[in-house]
Image (cartoon, rainbow, N blue to C red; front, side, top):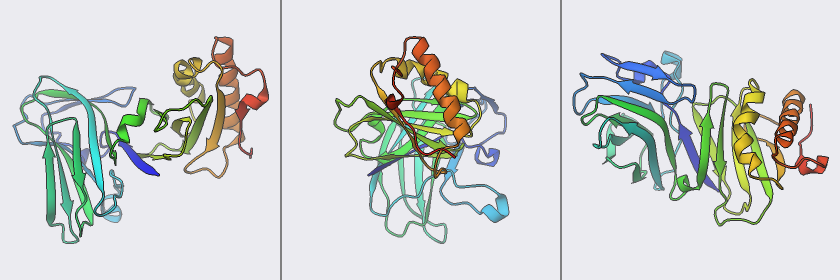
Length: 272
């Protein structure tokens, strides 16, 4: 099982350098950050695996990682010139002393978690930029990020379409529904799974827009069977969600999408 985690822009403004900054949040959850007086070397924003929740009320914005294991970090963003943005990872011990650091200016950074690490932080560091548009930060085992086919994020839901590791002739698409929203979106990728998977995180609202956002992908699976599975936060999916989901899928069928001629084409878990 490979773990892959997707993080958005920090919601806590204390983790962002706001002096002189203009920050705009888009419907797709990307963030436009501009600061004409930002000096080179200034930290733009920080993600942290450890926080003092009782004192600050802030939750961790980075996942737990295994000691001695090698991971890769990927950034999805664009900036105002060809000069890359620097990313920095600091590993801290129990006394908040830096054990090791990694720095890179590419979209991909490979690192190994050192012995004695208790927490770590990821920082986005300015080199010479006036603005950038940030989409996502991902951390996972080597090669896991490359399995992401597409991802969509909105206020009430996220979904990530993942390819099987070795390709597949399977006509089943597995939809794994998790309760959210989550500041850290976890994707558990089973190397033995030979079907396409779509990891969905939803708060139960805006189900119709969620279905419509999936429509393009599902319309390309004209003979696909859909398997709807309960994920994190659910023992079984709420019946109201399943009813809305079925209705949305049938609407896609009318528009020329997936076949739903038989109820067997959709396998649903136990209802409430």
